Image (cartoon, rainbow, N blue to C red):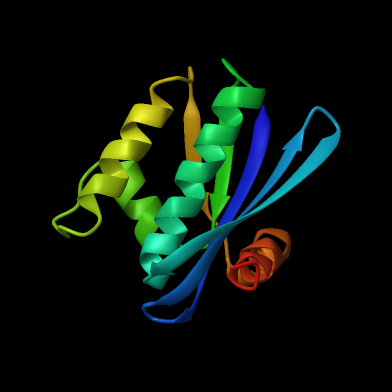
Length: 129
């Protein structure tokens, strides 16, 4: 099982945003920072999950993925596979498409203090723009 930690950050809301992805896989650790342009904090959180799924599709095809995310909104939307928020619908549709490439994908909400690596990577991405 691949452990995937994600976080999104915005400097302002909306503001310049970044996504951080921290992956523990087969004893190895991989770190990624993605500048995202101007987004809301919630949009950055969704984009972090999308970026992580794209990475896993390339490097860990067919694996079981266990996501850890400190955004309750993202976890709730993905787990329920539903949102009324029109802004989030395209993100959910992209996540659905990416999840379909894996046999099982699990999401778990974790507190921010348990997600320091992804947070660091997301904040780093803000300053890469």
